[in-house]
Image (cartoon, rainbow, N blue to C red):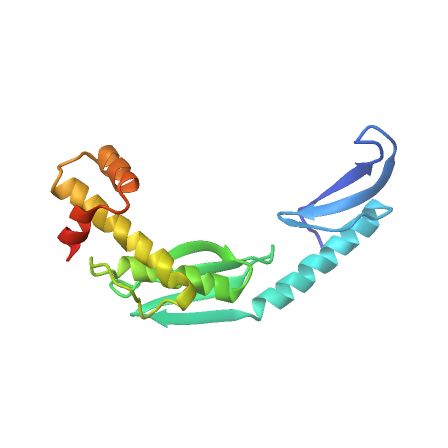
Length: 178
């Protein structure tokens, strides 16, 4: 098996002493220290083969409000996600959502909640878990403050952002949102 990887020497004494072993690296994967380059290369090949076999068999699919999230492990052990949009079937790369499918799904659900938000402040979003409700409400409140700063106070985008961050409990905004 030909693997485009690096085999790096490990030196004793903060890199100034004699070589004490070798580590095989491929992207974010790396082996433990081995005595020879061949051993490090063989260990890396086994690691990549095992990861590829394991990763290719685990896929998680979630449908929320017409949006589809597809999650699969990458070679580094993180979950990569793809987002299929209901309007046009466009597929966007959601990047890495974390180490588990649950973490990736939570990120996807928050993303969909934000994109399908109706512009009001609510105490409960039906597609989020209880531990994400506060984060979503905080996001909604900031959006309402920013909208108020832009449309009522007529601030430019930089000042709108600053005003929305500096006025978290503005009574004017709460009244405007009602």
